[in-house]
Length: 245
Image (tube, rainbow, N blue to C red; front, side, top):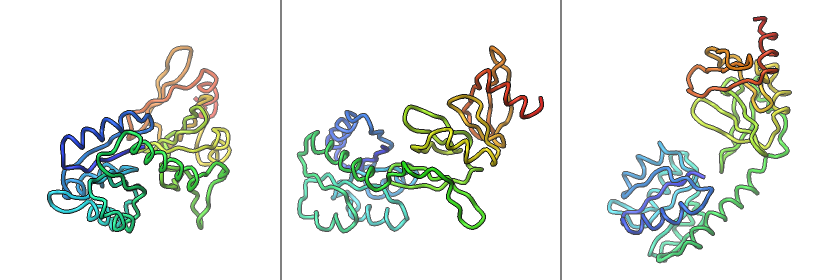
């Protein structure tokens, strides 16, 4: 969960960071001390959650939240402030929680848990196992915390099976899905995707080059990203046969 902090008081900001760093699922992706800094940085950082103080040197956290919404961004908003009188106004800009200073670790943890619970309820896509067709285009449904994203197959570089989920790699991001790799393989084999390992499905159109590794395996390099994927020995043989090389 990508979290951004907007807090002008250094000690309060450091305290909030310490609390958030104790939560395993949280990654702090930025911080700001003013309204202007926040608006400049949040759009670039693309956080899933923004912790906002209400009073800032050049405006209010309410202004920040309102502008975020106006720009089409949709992170969860948590106000962390000493001013209880702004609570009603805060909830008008879709804040998910409002915690008052001096808050404790449990307050921050409960806010994160509330978001995670909402996320599980609102974007459970476990049963989505087919591509979505819109006119003549096909899309793959994946999730990115509070958002359901529809990816075009041609935007995907590779898909990796990991524990109970799959990681879908595009040029800029990693997305997640509860589908199994064999489900993706069935959906995407007609779109130029090939199973090169029990844990990897790659988009052949994104391959830059392949180099031979130990035991006749292949290391796959992609155009546009620095990631590499190593095939299994059987996967390398199957890929060579498929390509006729």
